[in-house]
Length: 332
Image (tube, rainbow, N blue to C red; front, side, top):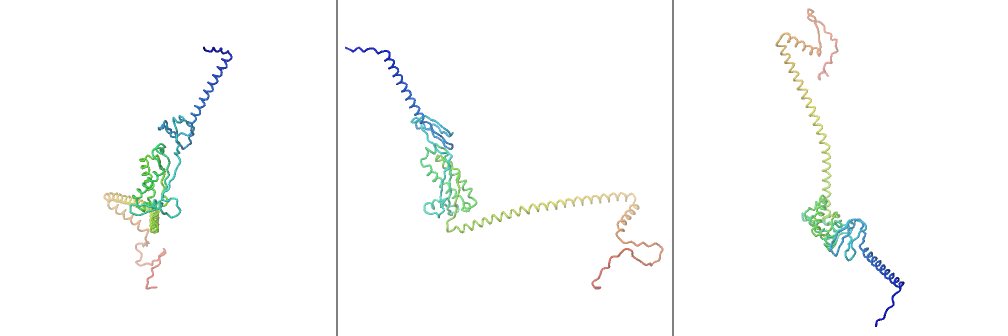
């Protein structure tokens, strides 16, 4: 026979309902706190020059590059990895910064053969940064080792196409540029996610036994270039002056030609005018021409006027000063 429970009083029912409500509220608050803490794990800070790779359920979702406070779904739904994409990194090859003589593996790394079958010891520096964060993180396992192997292969190929004179002196810039382009193509083919910013040749020298001879050759080439520059400077000084003098002579000749032609034309026109007058009255024209000729001649000679009918001989007393008589060699 079941026991009959006594009915609860109104006050007890109120207390039980309040306790149940408080328990439900506490449960909701705890759940919200747990959810908030879980969501907080999806926050991350992205600094300038960094990139974040967002993975959702282990697959690539997106790449974030804008700096600031970012958020993604909390783990294990999503995760992120941050890479520095603007930081320049540096790799030295062939003892580029070595102050001591090369030896061992470094010497083998620096020794390269040129197109004309000579050996040079070449050190160089490669500067690079992350170009594609996804490729740099997930496509290759040893990014640095791949870069070093590819850089050595690229520069050996370019040096093998170049003569030793080009590597030692005038062709250094071309070697650097061609090596950079070839290395970048190789890294893109490997999907290494690396962007090469510069390649700089450092120590480029022939082997020690023949170094003095090559130094003499380089010094002779520098002297040759200096003499060429001096000759070009002399040319730039002399040629313009000669051209100016030639232009002046041509201008004078042109003026002389114009004056001579004009004078000849004037004389011809005068002769033609005299011919017309002579054909009209020959005697008058002939007498006029004679008088004009005498006017031109007489002022330049000494004149002695003798009146007709005087004595045959008469004393001559020059009034104008006479020039001294020339002295002969025998009368000295």
